[in-house]
Structures are given as C-alpha cells and as structure tokens.
Image (spheres, each protein chain N blue to C red):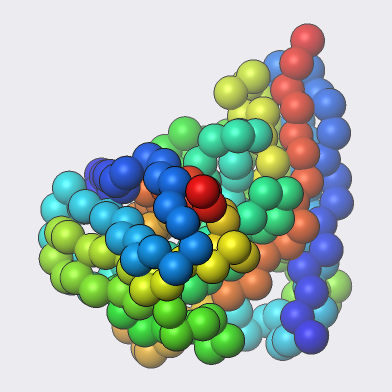
Length: 105
Length: 124
C-alpha cells in the first residue's frame, strides 16, 4: 500500500507569512496527488489536483509542486481564512495523508 | 448547484448493520463515480469505498472489505453504503463524495463535491 507522510503535523504562522506543507509518498505516484482543505465542522474542499493544478475558485496564493514521491503545498501569503487542516491524497489507492493543521498566530 | 444530502447515520451495537444514503442533485448522477470517506472526530480522512458511474466497478478500503457494500440507484439519484458486522472502530463521520475525472486517465480524478457528513456511532 502507498503511504503518505505529511509534515509538519501542525504549524502556527502569522498573517502574510509564506507557509509550506510537505507530502511524501512511500513509492512513486507520478503527479497523481491532490490537496484538500478542511475547516472545522465542514467537509473537505479540493484545492489542487495533479500536484499543481489549481481548482477553479481557489485563490492564487495557493500553489503546488512536486512529482514522484515529494510534493509541496505552498501558501504564499497566509490569510486568516486559511486556518484549516490540509490533506494530500494519492489517487492510486485514494489514500490520504494524516493532515497538517495550520493556525494563525 | 451540486448538492449531496446524506442520511441514515445513528447509534448501533457492534455486530449490527446500518445503511447510509446520499441523494444527489444538480448534476447527472449516472455519469459520475461516487465515493465514501470517513473521519473519526478529531482525526484524519480515510477513504472507504468507490463505485463507478455505471456500477460495474466497486473498490473498498482494506479495513471494510468484506463487511461494507456500496451501491447506487440512478433512478433515485442515490448512493448507498451498506455496513454490516459493524465494529467500534467504524465509529466515524461518513461523507459521500462525487468523483471528478479531469482527463480520461484511470488515476486522474479528484473529489469535487462532498456531502454534509453523517455520524455513525458503534457502541454497546
């Protein structure tokens, strides 16, 4: 089975900071990786698919990169509404990473 | 607009069964695969099951294989998850989610719409 390891598991950053979340796959998955954002009490929402394609309506401060086993989600300038938990997902076996909780300082 | 409205959660004893429903609107239900994803409160997401647009393909996560069944009724725009032999570790918030292919490739999709979630509690 493919395992996804996200780091860090949580972070606290100030408004305007650049934030990077990493997702590492246990084997090569090409670019078959999606990113989701989940706010408390809400269902997840897709941010990014195919590692770096922004879903329509998602702010351009979000970007994704990577391939094979190493992927990153970057928020270029953190906003208060970005406080959430972020999950990566590979699409071979649909496995999710364990999540990264982003808090605003 | 796309809506996925879930029902059927509740409290059930270990070993018993429960069926979840997810009724879709705002898109042509019969054209899309559907998933179930669960989340233990305060924990991460776990993919549970998938059914293809025509019902011919069904896949399950290892933790539910052999105990859960996924089905769909396109005449009612409804997705089902039949959960048998329930265990305490099946306690979670269950979401249905719509599959969104972005090319014709087998692994090229994401989940673009989710239901509101329904809580299943397995407890004696």
